[in-house]
Image (tube, rainbow, N blue to C red; front, side):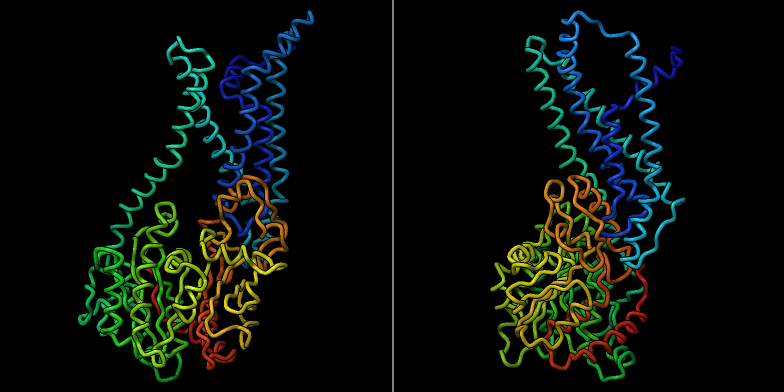
Length: 575
């Protein structure tokens, strides 16, 4: 039987993948191509495939390690005890089988390509997004294989480290003790890298980059001259202390004349108050400064006050701000405070307690001031939060009863899966209702909406009480549905009938679904409004509902949507 060329044999022996690991890793690679929540582009599909393949490969490597360490030795002893010897052609055939298996795997992965494209086209249709062609999707494979290979090389590096430690630990120790000790050292090192070193590097890099960005003056957000805005010459808050997104919040938007042009109705000058991270030294001091700004601007005489805990960077969604101002013709005050300059994703890794502490301080201070106003002659107090803003807003309350005795209405949009109050309400939902579209206590105070159609069905419903809490959660929003529990636990929302814009062909698979939804997270805002983590004009519908104002009829809200569209068209793009 002809032998393989020596260089090929040597290269294969050095780089040889574990045969069974190759099979299991390839199966995981293929399963990662199945649909998840939103369409994945080539890069993130490749990342998901590479991570899943490496996970499958790792699982089999552990089995192979056991085979090489002791099982094969037992088999060899038993084989030789029977008086037989291992044929000389076995090692040569092993290499041929392994190489043939690798070729078959690559061909099989390409064969699955067409089905993967069909799956992604289905998800794209549900989310009104463009789909990739089969030719474009071919690029998934080099990306996925590259990540898979890199992770395998890292894993082999740790295996070599374990072997080196085992050789260099004191030889007077028994081999089993040295082996266990070396594995403990390697596992502690891996844990430290994954949980401390790598996140720390990401956070420090982000802090360095975004601290510079936070201090910049956006060209399209000049310092306001109106006394109704923080940062103006009359304000108690210095313009320089507001941060980039605080400056955008108070420097943009529409004044009374701008609102009148958009709505063709008389309008008041909207109040927007804000405290930046550098405006005061603590969460409590920033909250107190916001309250003083509300007093200074005359917010107590307005029809509605909206508390808007920010996302990680200090961003207040301009859609939410303009929605409230369009609905109330500017007779409003919006209050916000910054707690970080890191993007929400990085802040989520770094410290969610920071958002919670800031939100609790802001909401508590404003509610306490608001309760000192005459009960029959004070503005409606509304609370709004999006993404990390939900975590911040929820932190101000012990439970649902505490929310209801503190504010008149709450709109929480795209709540992260770790939102405690949201999780409690969904877990205790009425029997027979879905996690993706739950009903709590027959909808007397709390309601959940997947889309605009759900909210239209709530309009005019007299069974919804005067104090209202509304969660808007897209079935395709990975921010809502991502959880570490996806690694080992099938969630209810993947056992139930699919929500409005989730593919019914998405199914839970251990580890794989976790990596898929993790890969969806960075692209959650890259889909059209009404899907993923983009809520758009649905925020206006939600604010109209929780305001519980009899003048906000379906016709009035439909008109306000058009006015909001015109208002947003006047605003500059982010710079």
